Image 1 (cartoon, helix red, strand yellow):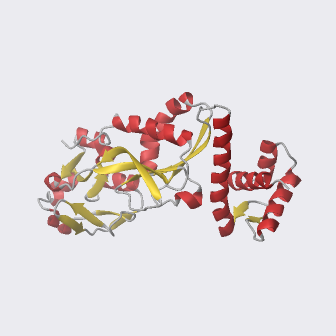
Image 2 (image 1 turned 135 degrees about the vertical axis):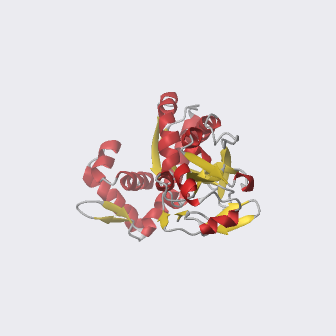
Amino acid sequence: MDKLLWMRCLVRAIETGSFSAVARELGIGQPNVSRHIASLEKALDTRLLHRSTRQLVATAEGQRYYAQARQALELIAQAESDARGQQKPQGLLRVACAPTLGTEKIIPALPDFLARYPDVEVELRLGDGYVDLIAEGVDIAVRGGVLKDSSLRARRVGTSERICVASAKYLDQHGTPEQPADLLQHQCLIYTLMAGGGGWPFKDGAVHVQGRLRLNSLDGIRKAVMQDLGIAYLPSWTIAEQLRSGELRAVLTAHSPGRSPLNAVYAAERLLPQRAAVFIDFISGVFAATPGLDGRSIVP
């Protein structure tokens, strides 16, 4: 009975979605992969995978087991690496972040990271929604705001400021708000995933704005404000070029709530893999050279 092999088969089956891929990777026959996972399910007396001719899908129990098993396998690999005196970062690194941050700042920097650490693989999960790091097996999530979840730890990798902006055409047609309360007389572009139920925070309190257009994507909000559809509340680094060119204008800057931290968040109960630690160091350097994330305001 080799429960470690059973565990490794299940983890890689969930990650690859294919028994044949696991068989090739581990150098065993595909029927053996299926038998090992079936043996694990029998030992645990629970179904871990839904099998069909097209795909493998983890059950709820399988997802919970996967998260713990993956951590156990990583600890074993780390112990073996330490015993051999190997300190080089290696393995698969899973990172979650917002699409705009990932596509515009992290992906352009990845060639340098991957060249520096040739034994590390990166899986970048782009999405604006909340990610359960433990349940989904994610090593790091890059998130803005103050950490409130005690099961997580955070390291600051930058700072961000959110500002109100609108196109010159919109402001010429509808006027410029002078006080946060004036936003109630304007079309505001609503980001549906924003914490706080849609209230835009200012120095003296939040304003619950309204508007005819609602989006669940920061990139969508950015495109909408450039189409003269209303006033947006966006991280300044996402619109740095438009502010410099004058295509967008910042408004209500005297009422800004100030900067908030941008953190690399990871599970407190896990040993942080070396590949994750070096990635956090790397993106800290990237963001330190990024206007709007480096601690300095870019508002004209």
